[in-house]
Length: 176
Image (cartoon, rainbow, N blue to C red; front, top):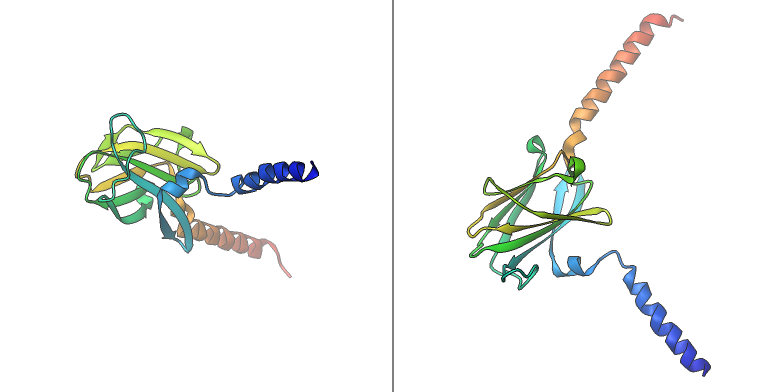
């Protein structure tokens, strides 16, 4: 009897240990791209799925490829350069909040510079965006209000200017 109780407890607690993994099923089904910018690196998950009726996340489109992923700080956006989208696909993207964010979670999604509607959800510390990708799309841009290198060298220059100003003012007033 005690052995049965131990086996039951073991069978309940072991799966719970695996459930606390930092990955979820969506990330396991998606491809990942490492985004390197300003000395940091971030994992961006994405997936191209063949649009089969109204089924989200149907069969993976193995032809569509991500060629390049980059940040455009001037437009506060993530830019996906893609190739081989031979039919209308569903594209899913997951990125950390600290890579790209938008006020009130209102992003702009463009496929070859044309606005696209999208579904948005939040998972832990990531944003998930799903949208329909037209055939032959070569570029997808997700625009937010702040992006990773936003405070790179500009903040450093501002800090340096403030420090020099404070030193200059204090040198005038303090006499030894």
